[in-house]
Amino acid sequence: MSETTAHTPATAPGPLDEYPIHQTPLPIARAASSDRNFYDRSYFNAHNRDGALMLVTGFGVYPNLGVVDAYAALRRGDEITSVRFSDARTDRSLDMAVGGYRIEVVEPLRRIRLVCDHEDLGLDLTWTGAFPAIQEQPHVMLAGNRPTLDASRFAQVGAWEGTIAVGGEDIAVDPAIWTGTRDRSWGIRPVGEAEPPGRAATEGSGGFWWLYVPLRFDDFAVVVIIQENPDGYRTLNDAVRVFPDGSVEQLGWPRITIDYRSGTRHPESASLELRTPDGKPLTIDIRTVTGIPLHIGCGYGGDPDWQHGQWKGRDWSWANSYDLTDPAIAGRIPWGVTDHIAHARCGDAEGWGLFEHASVGRHDPTGFADLLSVAP
Image (cartoon, rainbow, N blue to C red; front, top):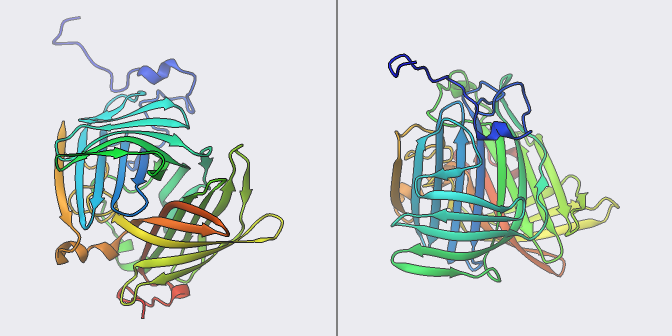
């Protein structure tokens, strides 16, 4: 066949099709769902506990959009340095790389190497899980009868080792100090260019309240996930404790008390009242240290500079810095999800982890009546 008449199939076998991992009668290049918002993503955070440095980074594949991308954002003081990479993606393989960013699975579910090669922010970090990864409850959100989010996710707490290069300085990352959490999620969630909001623009729920708290202690890890409607009706409740041998115990229906800074919805501290399977109370007290708003430099919902899965052309990268004291930037912080470093106490045990929280609009249990309500 001549070059002028040769045809490349829209879907051809890819590297992963060699392996017995298929879930549908489709080649791996095709997602089982035709929803444009199908995604497959990794998320990591890392910090040195005192709040001087915090890193949030991730990598995503969007098969139905033909896009692969990654980002890394480092907070030092009140400044966030953010780098982003995006490119076209056709086949699906074990290769997790885009531009100068790549993830290497050294030991599945235990050790991961993460590399970011960029003049504004360089990373060469290795993650080691401190406890086994745990599968979370399915996460579903509906707009009317349509799923806007329908995803699976597993989570893990652990430690980091390696180097961060920023501002002409190489920062050593010591696993005795640097800790963090990670997750892998896949399914459907809003990605790419925004879809027309339609009815939801005028008849939305009126509020969004979300809490995600994975914590690492010496002898166990805890993962708490809660989502509530404006009236406090809980649409997602998942609270577990995992031990080194992989055994997991459920911790019931958490009661949450959050102390918000006066005049804001910034969580300064929180108390999680849990209960073990034998009925004994288990209380975790949390103090937030610093945080990164995921919609400022990280591409999550509400980020005006870049959204996950958005088509930016081939071999695209961009870097930017954000001054969180700039009124134009600070004014955006309350309108999205923020990842806070969490310093936790559970009895005599000290722990560290993530306090990811968003409270936007009405939420009756905390007394927020509308979009502009804040703590007294």
